[in-house]
Image (cartoon, rainbow, N blue to C red):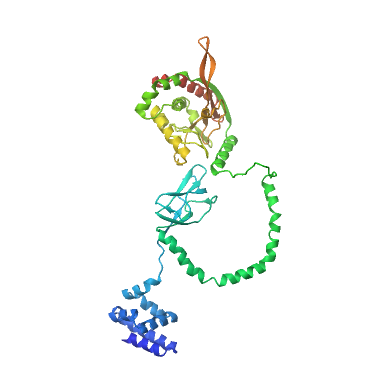
Length: 464
């Protein structure tokens, strides 16, 4: 009843705001001493209907009286329902962020978007790709919905946790978002045009001068980095990918750090090719994978590393780390660059397991789905340039390893066998090694062991 009298006084004496403030304060003190006034049915009726209630609402919030704020927050469920519609909740959008890219990768370049704003995506569907120094990583949508906008551009450098896109969980949100922005933009519309009209008048003169100033600085900056040749016809300039930059840096570091030396030998492929031709069908029926020459060289390299452990070692400062395991990296050339996945525990694998692992890793590398963990480590590398027709080459060591075996194309050449000249399928093999750690004798012995095992695979069965 006292609260109603306050409202009546406020309605009849609207010209005296101080009187209303005092009455409101006194009513709040009474309300504090009588909690039933806030929770009774009269209060609920008062707040939801009646002309005096509306007058009370308008006067209370315009006066900004703190007593009424405490009154509204005192725990009345009716008041909470009355105030709730004025609060906005934005829980219908999610943000797609850059995932963790690996221990040794701190950032990447956003290569391209797989979706466009306005398109619908499903949960865990790839919406963009990030190119790093080693692999290409997908950014997946955290939920199903519609892409509202992208927060970065193609070519931008991004780090783990960077927000890439805003996704609405429902299509309705994507349409309601503009409608919510309309009233916001409609209010400030009058002021920006006035400012815009003034800005051109003030900036017209400086704008004409600004292009002249930047026109002179660019030439010195470009000439300071590298000499810029005049443009020619049928030329195009394309920035290097991060993977290509990384490969270039590592290979140059290899040349600058290691004492590189290469030794060569030639291998008669007759027996290994005969073995593959004789058992390829039975091998495929049992293991579901084709028998290739690569597995034979991997097994030969494992045997040679076990006979010459120093080739499997590495220099670390003033120490030498000898590895009692054999993880062989295989160089795979892809359209985006060279990647080197690792066959872990190659010394414990048979021919079938090696072939299956090679096929899986090569497929992932060409599809761009290979992970960083599948390329980390490796104690020795085998590179098969023969698939591209290379006859002979000097491969470069893949740091922090100490040696690399290079395979080449098989060419039929005249060879002397038993005093008779006969045609034989021959392959040149090369071993590039770090001469700081590996002496020429160990390098030659290593390559001789590879030659012996490939030319006579039965040595593997007899361990001789």
